[in-house]
Length: 299
Image 1 (tube, one colour):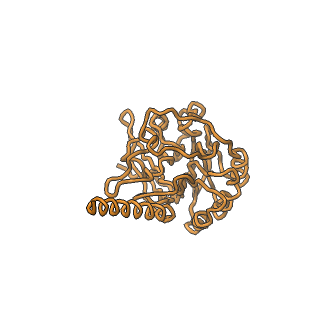
Image 2 (cartoon, helix red, strand yellow):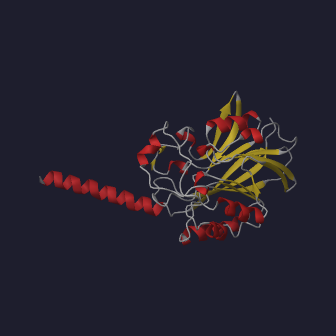
Image 3 (tube, rainbow, N blue to C red):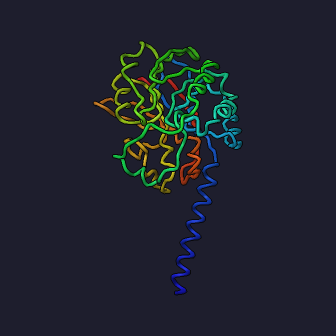
């Protein structure tokens, strides 16, 4: 009896320790830098700050202040790939968090959590790829969020496209609304990009059906979020799930997505936040990424 009691106590202690560490890691915000040669030949370098999955609630002071601190990176362009909100009163907190970045050029798309408030879910459901994704829940102030962001000049890319010029480089950016709840309609933006532009694709959830369409139109770089990098990962192994059909090996960071013989760089952000019902991360720190984009190498 003593052996089993000791074993149970040890297991319990390990579990409690892992939980405590996961709670702490979810607040251990970090910034990564990644180099990527994707710009047209002869272009000046571009510093693109990629942020995703803020999942902000009004009382998350540490997260809000950390996001505000990202302005010190002085990015040339900010791209947010959805899931800004996690609360019905979250819009002012989002604006406060992005305060130091809103005066810079910005692009954004939305995620499901910008439409519906988060709900308590069984974490095991994420292992079922065939589960039905429901686009329902308590409505969030989506229109107010869009109005706030666009009032600062940020461009809404939800099934839309637009062009801008930064550091002399012409950018043709297009995006989709959230594929996770099937709000994407790539046909509204499909077709060739403008010649001699940097072709940038933006979406929230990196479902392969959407990535294939971006690749088919010869996009230079695709940015996405949604996966949380797996959120609960196995050290030295990585993600167990992506919450979409993207392979787990591409759950976060820069990789290559290939379709019909064409390879396109894909950057998936592990995101800044979590659902307020599961405020934990393991072996997957919350992050923002500064992408140092340079001109393509001439082969």
